[in-house]
Length: 305
Image (cartoon, rainbow, N blue to C red):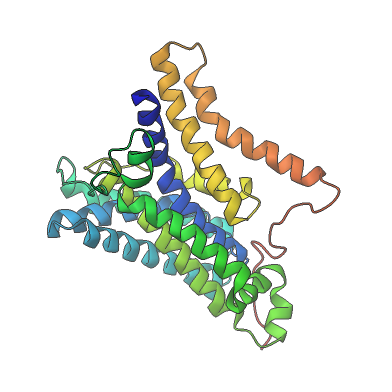
């Protein structure tokens, strides 16, 4: 029982940054913008988040630092891809490279330092319930924020007029512009939200997952978050399942090595991406429904003047 509980808690911890980052990227892509710079925004968020927490002694302020760093990085992307109509794929890749270098510069003075990690929820008599107690009522605040974020995004996209307008910008920006909607402004806000989520996801790593910062600690999680958006068919509900599935694969590969199972760790690491490729193939072959990807995803929009 304790082993099962430990595995579930490890899966939740490993899945949370993926879920937060992927939720932000889903909103960004729903608006028609393809931002491949999630990894760069995450690692800068991790460096700034740890710096803020170490300087102030507050995990909450550290999380705000991470969010602010992610938003600033996203604004750089928005300026290039939306303001100057530069190719979105190239801009996103450049943002990742910039983020990796910038995070090393920011975090150089904090390598080797430690902080007190985020506190876990503790409800007397409830958290102590075997298995269920710690899983549901004994997590840190980031886990509950990630779930609330997905619910909020689902409600926004499918139950509000603003969400409908955002999806319209992603499906047909020319028609949305003809109706008088400020497509570039809407996409900028969506990119900023994606940056805020990526920064928060990056800040989670040194603030709750491990109480220290090391360069490159995101270890490709930004790319997994991008794959997760595709895996979920751009739907918030499937995003939760995919995030916990990807997190489970990450944790189980460690346990598989400990149990002596003869499956190469490299194969286990490749499973999330393999699953994404399979889902893409299945979506492309589907006769009805097909892919739910926004029709104008990655397309540069320059309004008529």
